[in-house]
Image 1 (cartoon, rainbow, N blue to C red):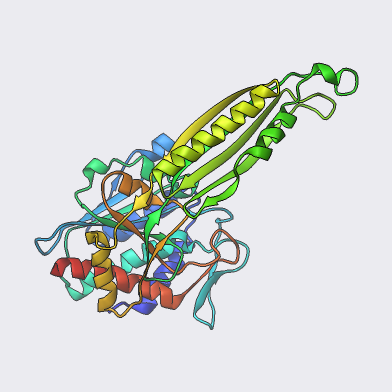
Image 2: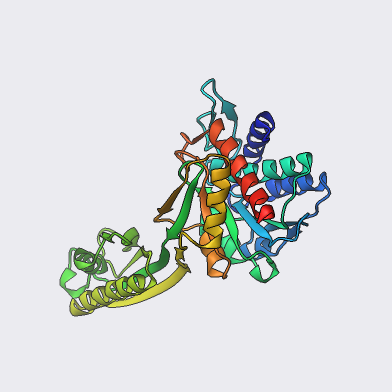
Length: 373
């Protein structure tokens, strides 16, 4: 029932509307106009004002034709850079790529295209469907900021699906990590590096000593940590009086995340203080873990929907967060679905037309299966 050509045309058109994080205004207007021609007015929240961006999150409510529980479908509007002036090209191999100068934007416009095409098909074929809540967020690529600033008390759905994962259509993320952002700061003492270095305390050297004995990389099958940014010092001929490091810790287990974070902080503080420096540590909890059981209703529904269209499925665990992390954290069970995007965040990004079609087929099947249920 999915209209392949319409879907491809819609996806390409959307990718060519600029919407890098914080500048989603043009794409917001595109979505509002698309739904307005179909008799639906969206609700835009104040996330744009809070985040000092062009657009807030958009929510569209579609009344159901059957007495069934509402379903939430979500995807994010923003893209990474280089994402201005995208030119999407359909190749003879039925793969859509950019012209090589930018990303493509399948992350996450492939998800949005699937939602729009599924809705278009429902209207065109007069299919029964439950009430639908379609949420399009901003600044996902900047740390799930749009989703974090959305008011979930206005959502009536008790389960949902985000279309924003790697993997082929039919990939279903049931586990993903919680994450802490950790900033470490070392304070030493400045001195002339050539005249009296012994009077100084080199904060960079202290940081190095701490890093040498702190966990880094994969801790266990569920847990990782990383040090990603380090900066400090004033000049090459001054003993560095301060140094700053930004890192993170992730785990599928909240208990393990707390234990690892405590270990990182304790080792860091011990090494700095024992070597004559002072330190500060800031820990920021970024998002909660997802842990959905295979027999949870939100999972069994998508499994039935995939079976109806003979789409193979795979339940997976991932090491990354998504808007689904925030939605789950607001007590709405939510699975993140693979949409076939490849080489995202690079100028080699691409997606197969077959995967675009299967995304829309799966969304449509979820909706119609929910209506039957």
